[in-house]
Amino acid sequence: MTNPLKRSLVDIALEQIRQRIDNGSWALGERLPPEPELAERLGMSRNTVREAVRVLAFSGVLEVRQGDGTYVRARTDPLEIMLTLARGSIEQALEARGVIEVEAARLAAQRRDEDDIAALRAALQASADAHGLDLEQYVECDLAFHQRIVDSAHNPLLSELYRYFSQVIGAGLRQTISEPGRPQPAFDLHRQLLDAIERGDADAAGAANRALLI
Figure 1 (cartoon, helix red, strand yellow):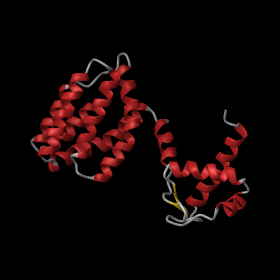
Figure 2 (figure 1 turned 120 degrees about the vertical axis):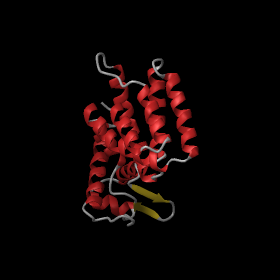
Figure 3 (figure 1 turned 90 degrees about the vertical axis):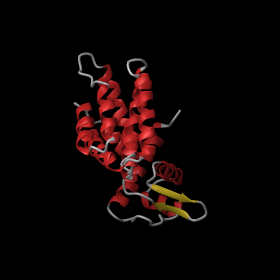
Figure 4 (figure 1 turned 120 degrees about the horizontal axis):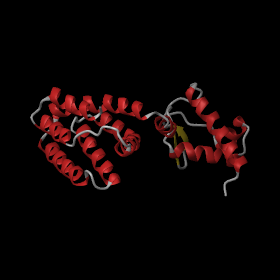
């Protein structure tokens, strides 16, 4: 069983390390002091500091290089971002989803190739097979379809952003689909979206994706 006091001390160490990275005391790419010195600076035990470093390395903020040291890899903690996203409302998640998906659909219509179209057709068919049956399977298939659309925009940064955000989108889908009395988008809209992308109609693709989010 986890010791509550140890967890509290680790949280304090995490916050102190994050603050030093945020205020520029430790810049991106800079090596942190050795563990004994770091523990002394933070006023913590080496075990506590070691655990805090492990957590931040797992989340991608720090990078531990064996035989070399620990380096600052990022200023933003993805785990904290996920917690913030998870605290948002369904309406806020839909707004954020729209910002990403609508523009991605427009770009996909302009940039897609034959491989993209084939992958989109397969993903849409899998989504159609699951529609109205198993909720969990449908959500996974729907997310896969929309991820394919974003990927068809051929912007790796946009693809990674959507992949990162998809967990929050999935939670919103599960709630909106299962909520009694809430209007559900017609599955035909997904087909209209794919058709618009296939024929290269950016305006129609954006409109179809926007309609799915109403």
